[in-house]
Amino acid sequence: MHQRGSKASQSYSRKRRNDYQHTEQFSDSPLLLENPVVPDIVRSVVEPDKVKTYLQKLIPEKKSDEKSTHVKILLGNSESQIFTAEFKNELINNFHLDSITLSESSPFSVDRIITLYGEQISLSAATAFIGFTNSAESNNLLRHESFTLRSQNYKIDILVEAREFELVSFSEGKASVDFAPYDFNRNLNVVNIKGDLQYLMNTVSEYSRRFSFQVYKQDTDIKILPTIRSHDYDHLFESSETEDQLRVSKEELLKFIYSKNVLNDLSCK
Image (tube, rainbow, N blue to C red; front, side):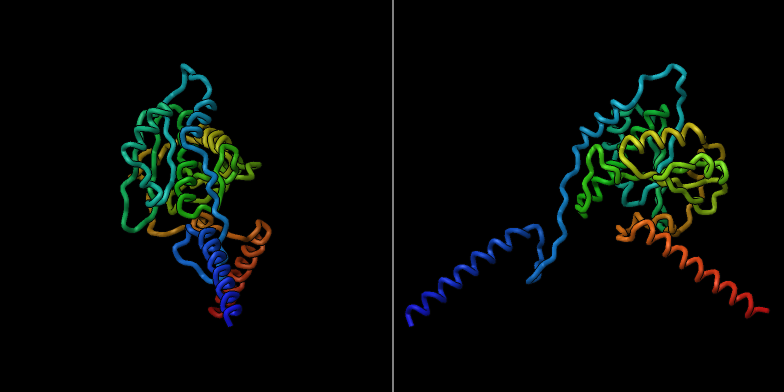
């Protein structure tokens, strides 16, 4: 009897040690299942100071004929909260901007327009840094991606005033660029750019040099609808579908919509 009790005690002791080790492994999770499946936590986010230095080195020497211009960035209302007075001053000082403005928030829309004023190449570097900052902030919550100086998963949305055929022609061959009309604003488009920091910087520079604002210089001239656009799809959650799967899904959706429209037309005759 005594020996069986001793073995039971030893078995219980071993189980307690294993339980402790198991809990230690997932100490970041406040709630645990008996057999938890916890996704890997990614903590690899480069320091902001290193990103600033990296982008500053990419800025070429100032040209005497460089004119002041502006870039409009489209962010969600929660994303725009990073634009504190301290952060705006930091951007202005580090990238030699003239000023930064934010559009008024609206209870009917999640969109905010951030306008950077200054020399064109400095604006592009600052825009890339904003893309990094938003990615780093989201990763602090989800911690599912790495963001290094060479990572190619950065993204930014900018507004571009251009006629559709001009934008299509200019964007041809840019595999990491997508665009769509911005609400009901004629010739105003939201251009989504994805890639590494240097690609963001160079591509923003290309679009801002090619297209300038004529009608939509002021944020008050831009109509913001109380909707979430289908173009925001990949900002809302991370999809596991591949590009081919997405293409097939879109084709099936279009076929379904077309068939419904045809049936409706026939029923009305």
